[in-house]
Length: 255
Ligand code: NI
Image 1 (cartoon, helix red, strand yellow):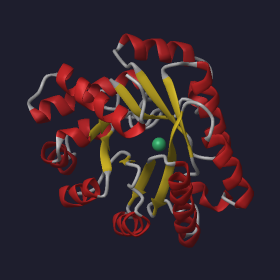
Image 2: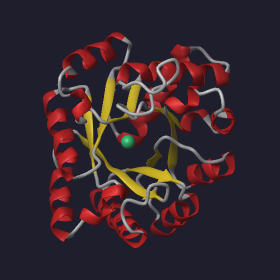
Image 3: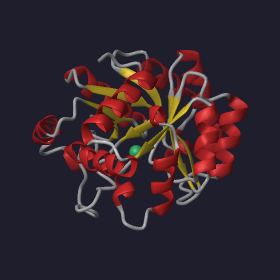
Image 4: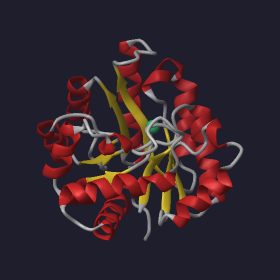
């Protein structure tokens, strides 16, 4: 399996990262994509990718921190994105649930980083919380999926997912897929094409059942894959193979 979205640089992992990585390997996780969310976290993701051959990095400014994206930071991010092991720009997008940066700044940072990804020829990893309409509009207008992209921890309906797939996107599911009341996500997971589905943890957040509320870690991507296998009537091995191939395709990672 490939955990397509993890925050290994989070301070939650500072005391036991080696054990966390060993458990991931033990659970059959062959690669982990460490996702940047601000400048420092992006730099730390790149450092982790340089130190571990099965870790890859993305660099980007999360909508929460959109207000920190000035011209100098954008240039530093661009230089960081040229380092080995960087497979995408992200996570970027819009978050109207917490609104930690003003709306106009969120949109500006989102668009600027889409343009940066295009200059670099890299895919984008998108965070969309309660902002489906605006995210879709910007994706279409900027042709954000031209080099591929990932909708991380997808929470929308099936028709939107299909529209995003047409724009070049992959749909990624995290721990909430395992929650009993996640009917909408279950439907999406059953109806979208198998060759556009990814699995992720978003650790240390979003632990799947039966660990809901606890610190999450890459080994638990297996529980998300298991739920997906159940929803699609396939074996865990088949889902693991398919989602890993998809992750390699969109992020350009070697087998
Ligand atoms: Ni995340």
